[in-house]
Length: 330
Image 1 (cartoon, rainbow, N blue to C red):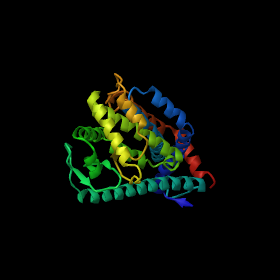
Image 2 (image 1 turned 135 degrees about the vertical axis):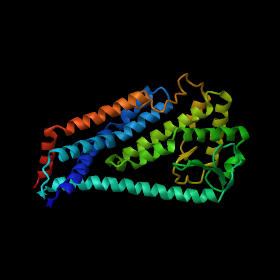
Image 3 (image 1 turned 90 degrees about the horizontal axis):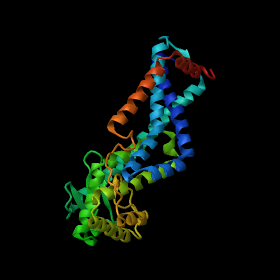
Image 4 (image 1 turned 180 degrees about the horizontal axis):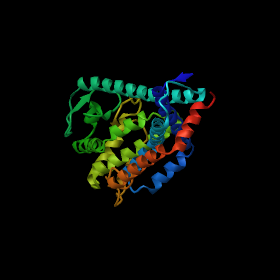
């Protein structure tokens, strides 16, 4: 198969991304449980845990993207602008795999968008919520006791009427504060990033384990932020969680995009944590604690990664490696 310079340049980016991100995905899946155990045990707060899990999930994509940038730049710098060159089938297969990974991520994004539209229809059919929420909120008729913050750019609160009827005013304030904590932490955006990563890891069972671990950490972080160490708020939120969990017995949890108070999972650990005295560092709200320790540290890591990719692109050895991959099996 003979391809022109522009086509080969695009395929180099796709193939290098596919190979590196796939290798990183397999390594992450192999060591996930031990890495998660260390993250949870060594993190000073639930928010730090959630941030570090998010970074861990992004690693295959980040490594793949950096290598794709380096390989495509090296190809552009050193490859003569010839009319065409024959390429091998392994190179074409790797590039095709990269394109498939991107298309699958787009498909997941489309399904999530459709689910958001469905929630929007349910939300518009509800009535104004009887809650102290400082954002748009609606009460809806639903079998499952839904309490959800749905949407990315303009999140809205969806609340099952049976939850509002079951909870006291103080409990509802705690529930709304929990959802507002998700809003301030941009957890809906973070969850979308977890879901839409275009790599092989997203297709492996380990991805469900990691996403569940992130949700658990994010929920506990929202619990801590909503109660702010106040004992009465912690008791009110724990009581609301128990009431909502009792209402959830029987009906199946709907598929909801965004952050929810409860999806039907066990709540014993969350309630136990709320009823225990808060740790002195439990209210860490840095938002970047797992991403380099500080905004300056995160920026430094990003600059180092980009600089490394640019340096690699300037080396003829990388171009020779890319050319060898293109010619393999020709």
